[in-house]
Length: 263
Length: 245
Image (cartoon, rainbow over all chains, first blue to last red; front, side, top):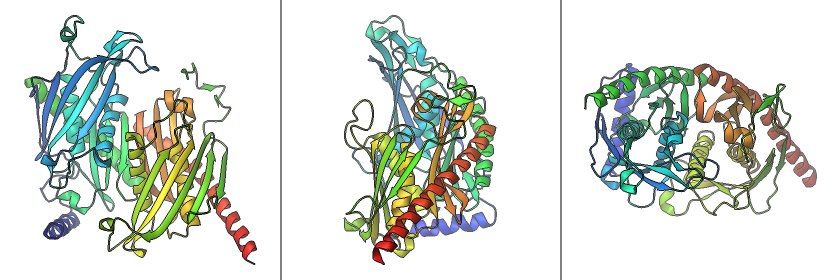
């Protein structure tokens, strides 16, 4: 099939560039693509963000409603992250229930938000044991040019930061800003032999879906990790990737915060 | 289950273990008649069975790969395996576990030897008590050896958690539920040595330095589990040899 041949050609190109110590788009190995963040793009949603990471585009919308708390956390709000890799975003995505890739994506984004305690869930209690705010984070892929995961994570936290809790609509007093205390950044690297490429583009991913995601909070703690794909990882490389992820996350966080505060 | 006030009292954990101690482990090989390879493992209160079918012809045919074997891995929890009945069938958690476990095995199975075929790995959790994915990988690894599937080495899995700021090996339920971090690993062990990482996940909060310590703790635990896996396999083959003599 022609698509297969193209993938092989791209793969050879990526690998030959790599042998010369370069990336096909001239980026440094530890450098993200250009990021563009716009919040408040969907008025009907409680919060939203459109993120462009290179040519990858994701929109995230936040909806909130009161609901029953989990029995083991009666006084805490609930966050539910869901991802839809709709067929509009790539010729390889198919309609239907979420497959393992979109489930993994949603769960890794979820862990970053949850484990960094980015949203103060204790302030989302309406009546302990009876009613709490449920925050639905819905990730909608628009264009998959590689690394939808990091783009989705950025869009999710940016959307949460722009969220107004719709209390008045439910007769629960005045609307208020969703309390957000941290800014986790996920950094996904493509592993090729004993090297790694931060924020791989789709062309770079033609060498294989062999990635490691490291999510870092604003205090440089690691809050989530996920090895994904059929490969073996050496300890040495793991060390290097963690270091690179911490520094890449800092730059990304700064850049996104700058763009959000300007808006 | 409610949150314990303290997880570590006088250097010991709630079940009396030291931070670097595993739960008791029991391994039996060849427990199922119909499967090509099988294994039953208990890790603490986890009870899991793994079965391997194949290499066999891949169906439906469109999943066949002319260059290598297709590996499938299904992690499934019995409805009665947990306190509150689990709705039967795959949920998001088990789909994710199946995916990362499958990828770990894909990295160590000599896939080129069986083009157009499939190796099916089925693991059933009969009782879960934190670390069921690690128990399943350990069982599946032994079942693959029992089925005679060529591999680069053994896959051995164990988790490390953080409770009261202390890193503990092979967390039990309370440590897993209320701990500050959980980090499951699987290692490729070849020639009696840990060679690389085949599965790695983490959630919680850990510093750069803690991750290093966690990795070393996991490696220590994995070597102990590996020796038990090896022992169980050797025992099985000696018994089979005697029966055939």
